[in-house]
Length: 502
Image (tube, rainbow, N blue to C red; front, side):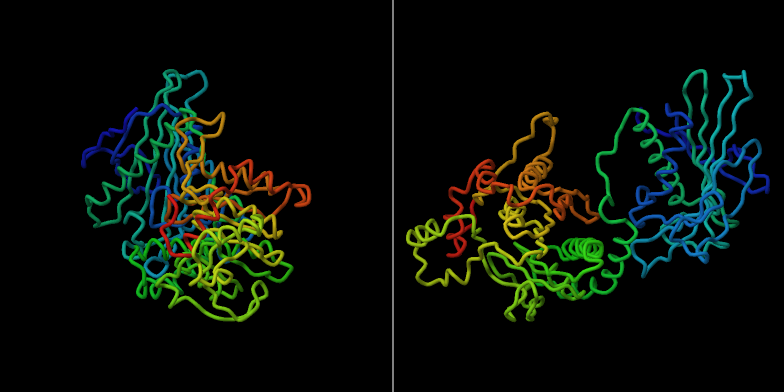
């Protein structure tokens, strides 16, 4: 069923009778095939996740639910709900949510009462409509108090009518306008959008849609977003204003702020009762993530095959527990894993003219102090090596795969796993492939879909082991995933500044 709603005329009579006398104006309606149970389920999901309807919002914090205050909510936050009564309806559920905006400098949070009502036909009259109603009432007293992200109305209503005998129904949106506030085109568009979202989710649920992406599995949404908001307010303007690369500053700054916020909250979990062991960012690129984490008090460093312009702004010095020596926090180095033999290294160095290059200084063997947290953020050639390096040094890790390469450093399209739909994207196949490497290295892999402005937002985390390193044959793992033939040649080309492998 496509979405082609019918619009009520401006002179349409109200369908809802508010006992207080408030006037509820109908705006749009559309036929539907989802029943009252699905309507209630979808509306509850939309209430708990307002970001589905508005990109200006982070989330909703529930302050009050059916007379109780959720754990962790202080008494001062437990504001009383705004009551409303409608003829022919019984109140079923009451919530008060706080809408949390993305930009706290522009918009303030808004408390909003959400009321669920139900009206059933008498027993034996199965041909009559069963009606469900959800009302949003913002906690404001005048239009001037309304934040940008909320329509300037006293209330919003979602009305579901269901014919039991025919298993058909319809949904509609309604406004309770402020006095002297016109029915503007923007308000009409918003009502259209709200109905569209409800219809889409209701029809999808009825058709058997199962959500495939699950956020906030490892780190709670609230803590991560609160930390992100603080970092954004503290750093974003300056970082964007001083951006030294040719790439889009807003995308990269906000993406790394989001990753930094996630790591900070993850590390608060992991190192609650012990000292932070330090981090290393392999393939650190522009170095911004290293800079942000160090600014927030986390010791660590990063390296990449070539220096970036940004490093002049982000590089600092300081001895750390994970990398002593008072060296720069961002370094030009190329990974040559220790699992590749010294004899092979010597042979390759002979085959390539490296007389003008300090090879020993530029090569890193991928061994780190035990416990060092390894970050592999869009590290490309180093992504499949990440869980192997972590196993060798007994270090936890987080990797965010991006471009697909194999263990030789060459570009590679990961195969679609057996039993998986052939429509599976190349990126999804890459994530499954590198997860398999981590699994074979003995890691218990956790997956988190990060809330960052990137389609490459899958974080694979290894902080727990399901098998001791001594029980894992890492050489066999390397061979299982294609071996390293050609890797040394590719590394030496990077040392000489030659083009990257394709």
